Image (cartoon, rainbow, N blue to C red; front, side):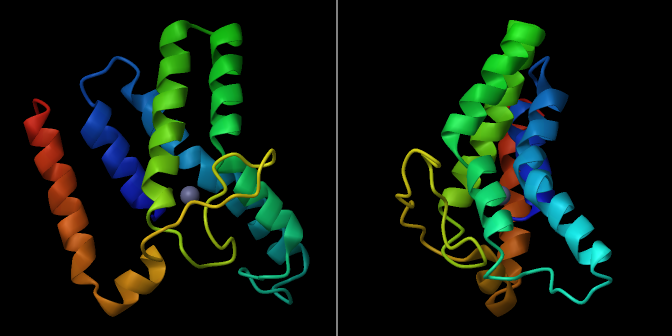
Length: 158
Ligand SMILES: [Zn+2]
């Protein structure tokens, strides 16, 4: 899914938890960790390289690493060791939610699916749709997405 959706859904689901903002931040982190290095590379080459390049193995590796439950578990463990158990729960909840949202919606794109156990395994989750392509065809799906998030927010106590 897209970054605003990750932010909104993390807040909708976890807003009553004391670690809500940790979860919201770490629900966005997996995309920032490949997006910014790629942005720097494009800027360094003064726009001569495209932002989405299917042959850029570095970006693919970063993306797959950041969308792996193994990385999410390590990040949570690190938060536990360096901070508090509450922080670790927030990190894991946010990161796992990000992956859960992406596995169904990332059939295409430069990364070609989510590798849940990367780098141990290259197996990719059989996604149903490619979110970006689906939104281009049926933009009203975004309104449904937002309405569902609002409904969940209200159902979980507003
Ligand atoms: Zn993602």
